[in-house]
Image (cartoon, rainbow, N blue to C red; front, side, top):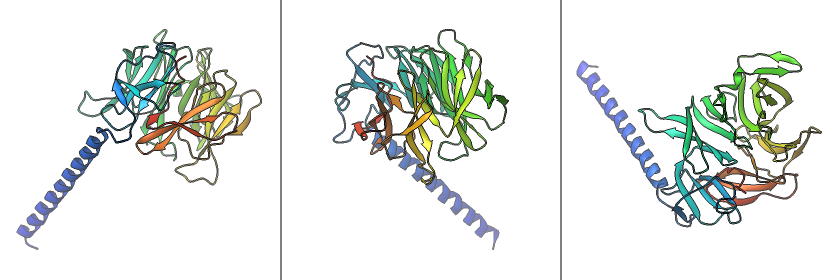
Length: 343
């Protein structure tokens, strides 16, 4: 083969690769533009003020709006009594969100740099930023304590799915009263079977807080297994309680945890079923939802939980009795897991 022919082949290959890249960018841009256009039959959405304050404007539910259109990914509110009704969009965009007692935590993309990065933003009752922290990876879980004094969040720093085993997380805690910041729960002492446990593969995610504002529960992964742990902020310890629990969420009365559990025989990419754990008896009760729920469930009261499942345009919200009875009911379309409605 002559040198001229080799150069011609190389030039053709470069041109072909460039064309493929341009087509990919154009298609990605087209998909993004499509999501910015409202779909027929979607919810009515208007911009306006959204409040996290209890009792402000009646009992309302605030959640991440997933409906296609100009307000996609914004925090939106609806009356708790009419969750499928018209939405008020705040203009504040979050990838993960939770709120309690008039305080919110919003994990969002930071578009300011050359490369996309992320940050955790603490919001007041009017959704105004009061504090922020840079994130080390892709946002995945967020929680505010019942009294609104503590914030926790989890990011993926390697991998991007809980379904497999090839991922790494980092979970951080922030005390909003003192400003004390724990960048990683991995700095806490792990107690397992009465002894201090150390392993380089330790990962934490899915924090949920108790009403005393110092106790929390979370998932610990190590040695290819997941565990429920109870944390003590004062002692800076986490104690292993039980195996095969992920993304716990504590009931308002503090007596039960709802969680996702890996069930043998289910597909690798959809392995979970929802269960409730009674903390006094340590008895598990499977819930009636038969689909795999990859979410940190929210309690709307001591009897009902709400969670998200994939929908036509992102995710839909469902409610379910927390005692194992009944059946799942769709609450609203195109929304992601809300905190409990403000009373």
